[in-house]
Each structure stands twice: as structure tokens, then as C-alpha cells.
Length: 181
Image (cartoon, rainbow, N blue to C red; front, side, top):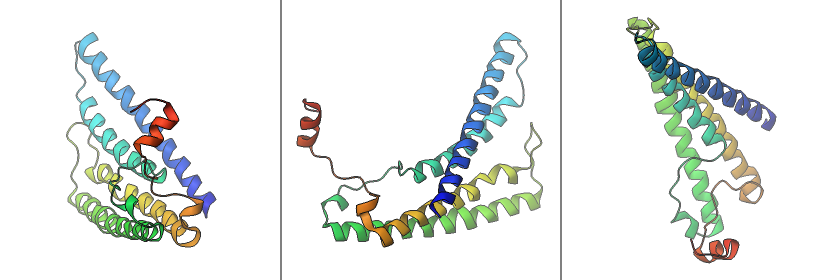
């Protein structure tokens, strides 16, 4: 199971890299066409918006898989380790519920309704449903990664893989760096 998750993570990272490279080339072409050729390209701004949407949503899933997402855990870090673990389990369950209901189900409804309506983009003529497909795809990856983290919490506990950052005290920063932060 872990090998499959790692394979999906690498696949997702590769997709984010390719989309980001396309975004850079698109914006570069927009600048060149506007300021060097004096003939602004009509499609570069629209494509940049869509690529940024995809890179942000898929990048969020990559960040979640690496546990680099934003979290406010100052109160949780003050709890007993057992309560800390229980809170981590509850948080993963809430993430799964929210992502499944809003991103996967809501994203599916958004994509299907937009495709059914036949809405297309003005400059590129792309069906908007394909642009919105980033929402449920990202949601699927986040749920998959959250299930892996929930499995680690319930089966292996926090000893093997910490899912919540340990508290950092000022004294530990001073000891490790030799100067106050």
C-alpha cells in the first residue's frame, strides 16, 4: 500500500512540475508577444489562469502528502500524548469528510454540470468542465493521503511517523543555534 501511495505522490509531483513549466513558458510567451513583438497574444492570460488553478490544487495535494500544510496546533501540542493522538485521528477524519463532500462530490457536480451546459472558455475554446476537473482530482489525492495518515495513526501510532509537529520552545532554538530567535 505504501509503495502505491509513493507512486501516486511521484506521479502528482511530476504533473505539478510539468504544469508549472508550462505556466512559466506561457507567461514568458505572453511577455515576449506583448513587449517584443508588440502583438499581445490573446490566449496566454487565460491559459495562465487555468494552469495556475491546476498547479495550486495539485500542489496542495502534494503539500498534504508531505505534511507541509498549514496547521494551528498550539493547543493540541499542550495535550497529553494520548489526547494528542486522538486529536490527530479526529482531524484526519474531518479532513476526509470535508474533502470527500466538498472537493470530490461538489467537484464532481461542478464538472458534470459545466460539461452538460457546454460552457467553453472565450480565448482557447476549452470546455470549462476540464478546467474544473482539478478540484475532484485534487480531492481524491488528498483523501488518499489522509487515509494513509489515518492508517499510520491508528495502526502504528505517532511513535513511527509523527503527523503533528513537536512543540518548539525558545530554549530549544537557543540551544540548537546558539542565539535567540
